[in-house]
Length: 121
Image (cartoon, rainbow, N blue to C red; front, side, top):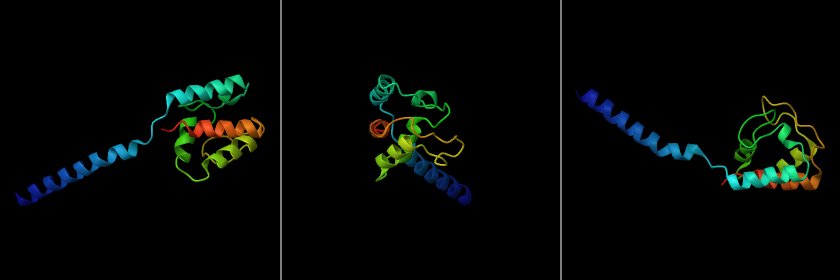
């Protein structure tokens, strides 16, 4: 009986600890107002980003929310994302084809990087 009681007690503790860690695993939420601004910027500048990317689902390239979440809180995030947009990238995202260079000029790449990273609240 003591063994069963101890097992139930340990199970209860494990469940309680699991419940306290779930919110931390959920991660940041995507800011929908900033997502709309990003889409508007892409459209108003005649950029072809949406042919390969979407805010929250895979098209050809990674969803921008995944980019924002991957770089969230990293020190050189803006510079890294700007460089990948302006110069193209290969091998940064397993399972995705390389991004070709020249899809946006340097100034546009900087604005896009800032807007993509701002998607995370």
